[in-house]
Amino acid sequence: MYISGAKNAAVAIIPAALLVDGPCRIENVPDISDVKLLEDIIKHLGAEIRFEDKNTIVINSHKLQSYKASYERVKCMRASYYLIGALLGRFGKAEVPFPGGCDFGFRPIDQHIKGFEALGAKVKIEHGIVYAYADELVGNQIYLDVVSVGATINLMLAAVKAKGITIIENAAKEPHVVDTANFLNAMGANIKGAGTDVIKIRGVDTLKGGATYSIIPDQIEAGTYMLAAAATRGDVTVRNVIPKHMESLTAKLTEMNVKVIENGDWIRVIGVDRLSKVNIKTLPYPGFPTDLQPQASVLLCQAEGTSTITEGVWDSRFQYIDELKRMGAHIRVEGRIAVIEGPTRLTGAPINATDLRAGAALVIAGLTAKGTTEVHNINYIDRGYENFEEKLRALGADIKRVEDRLSGPANCK
Ligand code: EPU
Image (cartoon, rainbow, N blue to C red; front, top):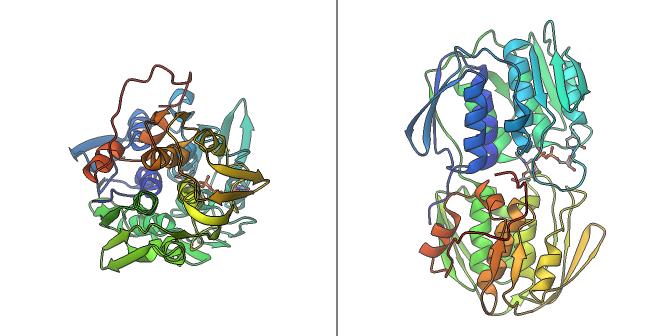
């Protein structure tokens, strides 16, 4: 099964295109609702977008006029924070509503703000809007107190055209950080060290378009199908992947006795009946990704004995566990640790997606369960997975999308 382009790279690279004077042709853009929303946001700021096909877009920002994003469009998206760095880098000013997105407890942006200020911007938050203004952005040395994907990328966006050299220390190393840097470099930026914990950016006067860039495969989408294969005792080959990005997951699956074969740009996962218990801790890359934590919990329900998952990134990312318990899972949460007893054959039930990755996990739970499972609020899943149920159906899953009369109100679509 073919893996789409990475959501978390696309939602950074599309705002990055606002810094470029001229057309950027971007391939392998995932066809998901977060990306559509972002395309709509930048169109309203004055960027021109042309679709060559559903996964290829050409963005031309030469006529960009506005540095103000509207609340209506931004409220649903965490990644809307990248508009602050991109507009600040482009105009020296940005007005962007405080970002929304999945609820994992408090999601501060203090490290983004600290970095913008170090580059010479004045930043204030009033009435839910982040105002950032700079007469001139000047490179500086910025040490991030926490390893933050968003702050690392946002500071690259703000610094890429700043005067002089910016050094980001304790930077995030995720594949989408590297992908965003590669995109900017393809357009004429001078960024070195992305993928290590020190990134050095030498400011350039202009970024010129004209280049084509292809987004990397989605590490989390690939991991979701790999975990689904192991949980359903299936045999699935994910194609268009970078196996190196999957190492932390491959190691855990192997530890559980799942057979994993990799070669070039594909990985085959062959499920086994008896899964060994395992302990997982989520960490920034190259650690085990927090965005695979809910899907891994479902697999651990099938393992023999007591497994644990420790959430090392977010304060609160276990809301979906109550839904799994409604399906019969034996899990207890103690702070940031989930203790999972298995093996348990789950039973189908109506359940509620509480966020994007939890939604995907609950679908996997439904595929392993006895009887029928109804997953509600699937617009969360549409935010980050291209053709989710079609891809699962192509692998043999018995799944269909139906009209949802029970969806909660006011979900971000
Ligand atoms: N943090 C701070 N201050 C900041 C920024 C972050 O304290 O200024 C803390 C956060 O509270 C968290 C940790 O640092 O505890 C890591 O947060 P990070 O900034 O790395 O997260 P993010 O940029 O908001 C991105 C992904 C998330 C993914 C995290 C961690 C995007 C759009 N989102 O969020 O993806 O969980 O990195 O890898 O790239 C998802 O795709 O489902 C998703 C939630």
